[in-house]
Length: 162
Image (tube, rainbow, N blue to C red; front, side, top):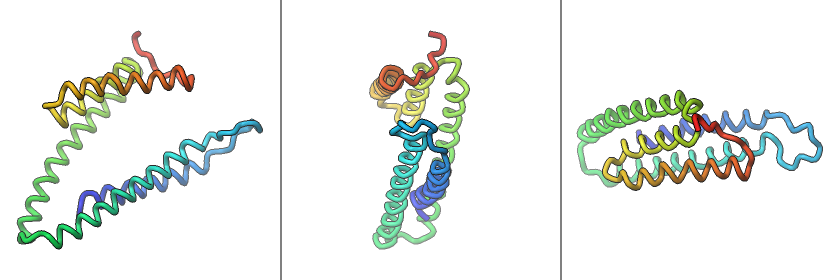
């Protein structure tokens, strides 16, 4: 079974549960509120379900193409899939450690610094040779998001020691 099928199917089930729970968010008590508290969670859930379905369909199509195109014996395909799976498991574990560090450091270091370190760490781990691009992403993304939330939406993110 293709990794995209597993990831897409799992993600779809989780996104479906998330979206159903988002519909349970109570309406605002303000009569003049145009946007209700559940609006954005519902939009995010629907988009998540859509992306999950796309991933699932891509996995199914790739699996069918692979069956048609491959001339390799089944045993060699299974062995190469197992080797890839071990590497993916190691990458997943390391990225989960990055996420754990991000969660732990978020409040004390603040949004900007912890997010920049997280993005730089993960992108550099995944693509070591492109560290300049990774550094640019790690600086620009948190700054833009911080400005949008603080200045436009007036939702204040943790500022940390600054």
